[in-house]
Length: 276
Image 1 (cartoon, rainbow, N blue to C red):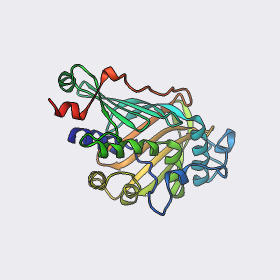
Image 2: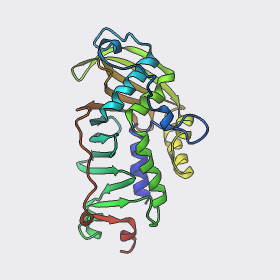
Image 3: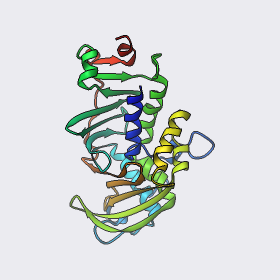
Image 4: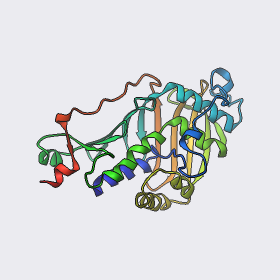
């Protein structure tokens, strides 16, 4: 279970899971969703290119949030502390598949609905009769399932529309740049680490672990967005993290289909391994 927790914390630290709503009396993930009052991020009103944005930073991020909410899915290329690719669908039915490589070995983590699947290495697959995915279901009674449920619920908060809305109040414009061949306006937002972690819907023990990791590099996380003239996020970055700087390049907005859960014949549980 410790290995699973380490993998999940690694995802958190890459910045993929840093958009979070409060479970208290403050703003929630639902509150952070762009509403009808958000300006439409389309055409020249968003700016982009090398000419800058006609909107203020807060308004530009809220406009982009509306655009990304409508898109609903994207392909991701992750670099920095973690190198890999992903396919993320943040519209229902939701799914997120992250594939990373380290020292020549490939690792996969998949979220489908409220369930998390971890790709099994050769050793684990051997002990599980050749099955290649470990299923972590928050509804299950297997040891550790409750903690995994916190990871699964966090997928709801990975939505880039929510991330933009959370970052909007403290956003500033940082210039214009060409990214992946597209003219973009660059925005930056500083979020205190303790405030960010407090808003994460995680078990207290895991919150403590994540806070410890993030605070190794400082008390503030800087989230950056590069937004094109259509209001689409082209690139996102998080700095001040324990792993250094992580960047996410978005492509294929609105074209990604949900990833299906592995077949039952390919799945084993943590309880199955503990029986070995």
